[in-house]
Length: 442
Image (cartoon, rainbow, N blue to C red; front, side, top):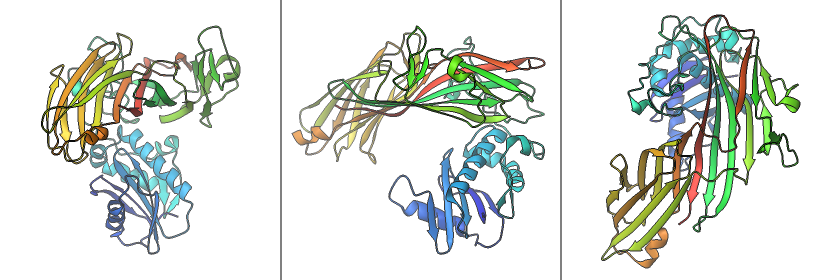
């Protein structure tokens, strides 16, 4: 039984507040944020208590999604409710961020009214809620291919590239007056997160891949969708399918709505998608990387005259020549007491700064073509620099996005809808790999 639900920004601003039972004080919002900010760790506990009030929260979209209860409610039930609330907010508002919540507060209050009655959860189904929600979402300006600052998760390379823009799937599932409201579209996204540790000698020490297949549906009706994966897709080390290069994962799990009667034989997933976003399949590959790591670093660290430290980095992108990495950032820890930084970068679009709070250099590269090599020379002023200070440099960590790339080699062979949709319907298949943890020892 839920007493309150509220949504806070990362700074503690009150965005949404709903009191269902009137049994908790309104200052519970301030009490919760005070407890979160008082903790030293980056990840506060999901469940916290203050006197006789229990707080359960999740972090999504840079926001705190919080529920309070005075009863001994199941934490897993409340966590699942909060995750569903965040997913529904993303479906109905188009995106999940502070701006969209502020612009659509009336819609979110209407969602809460339909989802919860006097603290008891009624439904979290998109198909049921769309029959009762009347408020239309307020969206921000549409995507422009000429505004490259908007290119993000699934960025378009050029105006001529026939790919879905990064914001094509960040629109509300229900829209009547918007420009894109009449489009019948379905998006199938293969998203992978890469965790890598590379030794100082360049040898790959650890590699893990976690991936999922997401579907976001804007079709009014669809009785069945069939998704064909690689015929040589195998689960576990003992299986080997097809005559080509095997695409293998260690573990795999499916959404409860996915029908698997054709999966073992033909590697076909069947599902009746509802409007909104669903994760159909999750998979994991541990201690193995079928392809070469996307980046290779060649570092040189030495002591210059006086109190100056020289760090020379040569970074090579081992992606295919027609591929591009986006939003690449390289973080290099530097010795304590570092005061200033001067740099020499190999191209004008790169930037670098010394973050005194984190004691690290942040090297940012907006676009990194496959097969290219970039370099940077950093000169750091470190008072009382010694040989021991050189040991404080590193390890280097990287973050990046790889559009149109999957590390496991998983591909969508076909995407079929039945019955055939009336009018024009577009089907999009998109691939992207994120860095979850990419560490290089120096």
